[in-house]
Image (cartoon, rainbow, N blue to C red; front, side, top):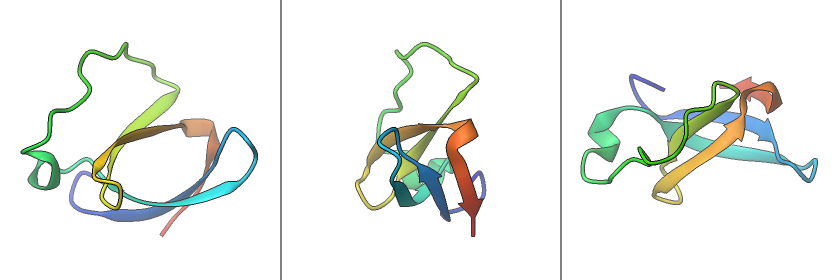
Length: 67
C-alpha cells in the first residue's frame, strides 16, 4: 500500500466480505486531507479508498487476503 494501489478483501462488521482498492501512497492522497484528528488505534488499518475517493478503515484481524 505504501508503493501503490492494492486490491484486498476484508470482512465487514455484518459478516460480509468487501473487496477494496486502497493505498497509503501520498501520490494518490496528496490533495486530500488525512484523518489526523482520529485517535490512533493499532488494531485498525486506515487506508485511502481509490474507488470512493475517501479514507476508510477496517479491523486488521478482519483482513482476508491481499492480491
